[in-house]
Image 1 (cartoon, one colour):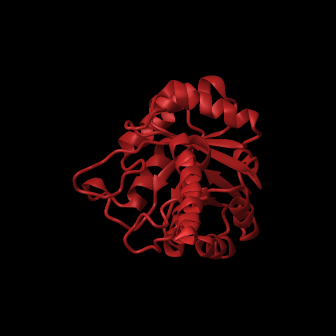
Image 2: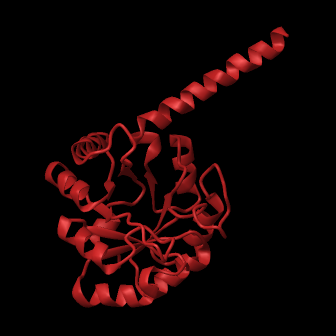
Length: 237
């Protein structure tokens, strides 16, 4: 039986509140305001990066929070909560769920995903979400005891499809084959796409940049208008 927090996600929208250092809204205060806006807008959960952002968001929002910490290691391409150090920090910051890279790629220090999950379970009852890029990784994560699966990393591994739209096929396949909830995440840019994710079998939908990155939202509008201008110029020629 699923945990009450997981059950509260069903059919709803989880907003990913993240910003890179090079972006105008980088900073925990901004992320907390985005999270509060998401709560007012009837989101059912928040996804956040770094202990500082997690702490700031938990101070202003009552929504369940999926926490992670993106860190780069020289010996691995895994960067979403890659080691036990990041897991412990995310838990201490107050996350309700910890998101981990659950791909088949080599992890920092050669630690396997199974070893990491075993160590986490030995010291905490925290809920775990597996960020995966294909069906096999999702099913393996279920076997390892993860509580949820997310399609976050489809398109971000060399061996997964490189799409511009959400990976609907992965969402559908995992939703049919896994017995734990599957969240649709990655390149969901419109309410229509989010609804299709649910129709494909997703338990809930995670949306980030289309809500919390104004520069990307602006660019989408600007590029659409540029296409109109370009087409009109071609006709006039």
